[in-house]
Image (cartoon, rainbow, N blue to C red; front, top):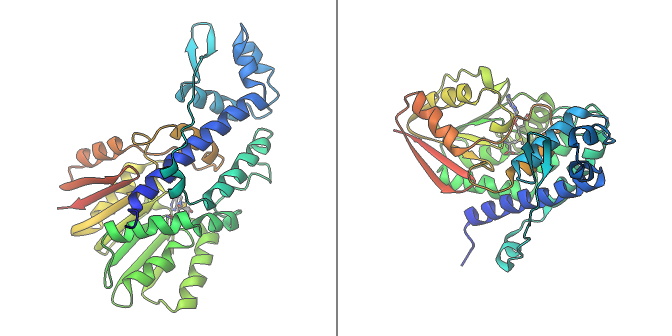
Length: 319
Ligand SMILES: C[S@@+](CC[C@H](N)C(=O)[O-])C[C@H]1O[C@@H](n2cnc3c(N)ncnc32)[C@H](O)[C@@H]1O
């Protein structure tokens, strides 16, 4: 029997976070940060750590705190004694789509340069300047797998109308193919470089039922009514999630669905470790929680049904 894609998504997201946790420990040792945190006067010792970018060092310390590696005491930060178990489950390794590992490795390497200065040219996480890197990530097996989940749970069929917030360079051609000439696809993104790549793919295939719009998601005012709205790995870049979610739900027909894919912080362990690395993109604000999204929907007074078919999936049906 085929493995459910949801299990593959959830396993890969958890392993990503766990792998990042191990690398956080390596960074702590490599820069003598743990050594400083073991001294009596940790604040003074931390000032001596050879990291030029103090803002990033402070963020690293916050992440250590979030992960329970250190705690704050009246005398300053203190290293906890902790035990981290690495579990090797055969089942997990059967489900890993290994191509995301090399992208995370690249980001781990960028930390050395980001510790010098955030604007270092080797920190290549910008959606425009480093569109090639992002395009490679979006072309991964992992990304095609979660797009299949979006099609299944979003019930994206031939003839569906779809709006995709923060569409990137690969989703447009894949979802436009799925909705076909009787459907409609609108991809929204603020990166001109990624949209340029998406546009060339759409044109190459002749999918003239697909449109792309360069706009910040915070200011969208959709006029049409859609069957499906997609937000995959985008909420972590939005400063005002509530506004974007509100406008997106408003753009759905009655019975329409918003599908969100993300490593929700209240559904996975060690997400703070992954956040540290992804935050090398300047617009990164942190992964969402499912609880926060439910509260937002309640505050806006939407009549919706919220389902969570997997740890990394939230499906919101407009009633
Ligand atoms: C990690 S990529 C995910 C792309 C796509 N959803 C996918 O799953 O392949 C995040 C995308 O969100 C876009 N993005 C981030 N913040 C945005 C904003 N405020 N408005 C519009 N697009 C945004 C980026 O340009 C990028 O294409």
